[in-house]
Image (cartoon, rainbow, N blue to C red; front, side):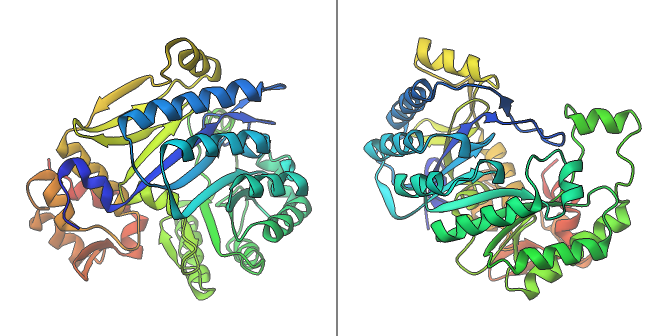
Length: 390
């Protein structure tokens, strides 16, 4: 597809991200923008979301909306009526694609069959479940509020309600062996799943785990060799089960990939609303990065008092767009289009940087695309560093 620089997003589509910042409890490993609140005025929050959707539609009118993603936090704490209201507001200003994907994240602790049916009736057609482990001891150590049994029951309810269901697991946990992870992953794959998001546990600054690790706690974390073995086993087991890795941490059966996340990785446009939401938006003036205040109260006040929940809107020069496209697209098994990169930057990738990475087996060229190999995706930060100009 030939498009101008301001319409580069058309190569990947347009999505809406809705951030619901509230949780029942803060997980000790979580560095997402989530907050514990006893009561939430959902009528007020819906009005704010509707206001932001109307405002953003004035920037980018007439687009076809390909995906909607309710993330958090714990969006399954939203009333189904709130979800329905957000979707109605979006439908009023952007035509929905015939095959629109509408995803909602859920935790097993907030699962009720009636609530799930409410989300389905509101328009949600894909559920992403934060299960994290099928081992009760490890769930406790991760600070999760549900048991493995509750997770399995929640998944059954989800499968009976939605055509597409994904769930997340965290591995490389404390004292987890390779054989334990292989068995757990095998169980997950036996649950009629068609999409898995599988993340290695990372210790982030500013989290409870980060503070504990800095104080000498969190014993039993895997070393680099075991982490590499866990990653390699994950790729092999999922591929053998018909869920190959289409992105570094995501595995899916054919036609079950997360279309919303593909918009990110293929460097499309997405409007982000809610506290801490980010966006990438293109119009005749160029492409912009948007962000919002992290604190729920601050975001709500900006919307209600000023009619604009953005904290900043920053123009993205074409060299930054090209770098972002490279960094995101090389996460995908399909890789990147070098011609698209060249059109954004005005010059091609440096052949002298590509060749050594090919010789090391970290990059490969196929069907006009440049891809990181399985080995290359294990050291992707270094690969990207070598490819970026300067």
